[in-house]
Length: 256
Length: 256
Image (cartoon, rainbow over all chains, first blue to last red; front, side, top):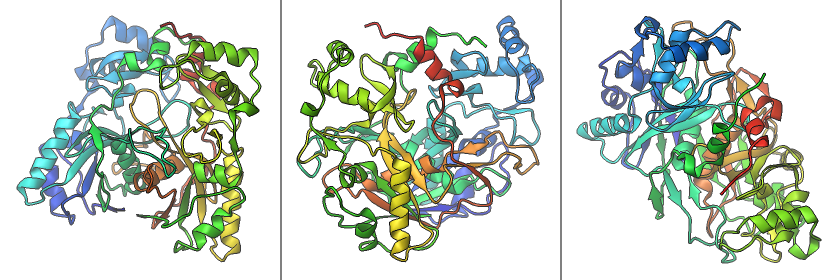
C-alpha cells in the first residue's frame, strides 16, 4: 500500500471544483482511494459563516455562560448557537460541546473550525459529506478517472485515548467497513474481530501524510490497497440504541 | 509513505524471537516503523492460558451470571475471572465487559482472545506492550537494523462509530503523538488540532494490510513516513480525570 499527497493544491475558494484540481495534479489509477480533508470540501461548498449570522437563542446563551473557550473566556454565545444549528443532539454541554451532527458524526463543536478560514469567522463541516464524496468521485470519472473511491475526512478526538486521529465523514465508491464474519484463523477458529472500519483506517493513514500546518496537503491518493472479497457495510455512525456510552452520557451531567 | 506486510511469518510459539523472524524476512531501513500484532507478541511471550487456571471469585460469578456470550449462553465465569485479573477497572459490567487493562488500555474483555490460540483456551494481551516493543527494537538493532521504531498493535471497537480499527498498545523508538501547538495555518491562524496520535494512525494504516484471517500477515513495515520536527508526547491512555466518558460510565448502570 502506498500513500501520496496531492501536490500544490491552491487555497480553495467557494465554487472550486476539487475533482478537477486533483485530477490536474495527481496520477490516478482504477482502484485508488482519494482522501480529501473536509476543510477544503467545506470551502469549495461555501460553508463559511460569520458569527453575526447567528441570532442567539436562550438555550445558546445559557450553554455559553457555563463554558470557557480556549483562552479561558466565556464562550461566544453566537458560536454555541452555530453549534446547536449544526447538531441533532447535544451529548455533553459542559465543559465543552460534544454533539451529533445532522449527518450522524459525533465530535466537539459540531466540527466547526475557527482556524483555516481566511475571510470569515467560522468554517462548518460539509452539509452531507457522503454526497460531497460522490460528487468528487463523479467529477473524477467525468475526467476519465474511473473507479476511484473518495473519502471526505476530518480529525477528531475520542474517549479513552489522548490525541486526535483521522476519521471518515463521508465516502463513495466503497463500503465503510468490511466484515470478517465467517472467516477463520490458521487453526480454523472463527475470528473474534468481525467488522473492520476501513474508511476510518484509510482516513487515519492519510492523516499521517496530510500535515495540519501551513504546508498541509489536504488530499492524498492511496494506491495498491484492496478491499478484498468480503462483505461490506455502510453503517459507520452508531445509533444511541447501539451505543452504551451515548446512553450513559444521556444520564450524566458534568459537575466541576 | 509505503506499507509492506512482512511475508511468510510462521505460526509463533512461546520463546520465539520476533525480531529475528522479522529481520530474516523483511528489508528494514533506518527510519522505518515496524508494527507487530499483539497476538504474535503474546504467543512469543507465552501469554496463553486455560480456563481451568482461573478459580472463580464471587464477583466473577455474579458478573458472568448477568451477561451472555456470543452464542447467547451465560458467560463462562472463569472467563470473567480472567478478565478481572487482567484489569484495574471495570468500566462496563453488563451487557459486556469493558475494562482498563493493567497497562492502561481500555477495551472489551481486557483484550483476551478466544480465537487464534492453537493449544490453549485463551490468549492474554502482552503484560507490558511498551517493554515488548522495546525488546523487539533492541533485537532488530542487535541484528544491524538501527533506528527502527516498533509498535505493538491490536484492533478494538469504540463508542460513537461502528467497527474496529487498529490501535497501538505499546511503542518504542518514537513518541506516541506529535503536537502541532504553536503551528499556524496558511493564513497565520493558530491550528485547532493540537495533538495527533501518530502511533494509533500508524496502527490503523498497518491494519489495512494485515488482514485478520488465515492468510494474515501480523507484521508490517512502514517506510518513508516522517515524524517531523515537532514536539512529541508519550501520553496515550487517558486518566479518568481527563475523560468525561469514563466519569459518566462510573455513574451509569446498564438496565435492559
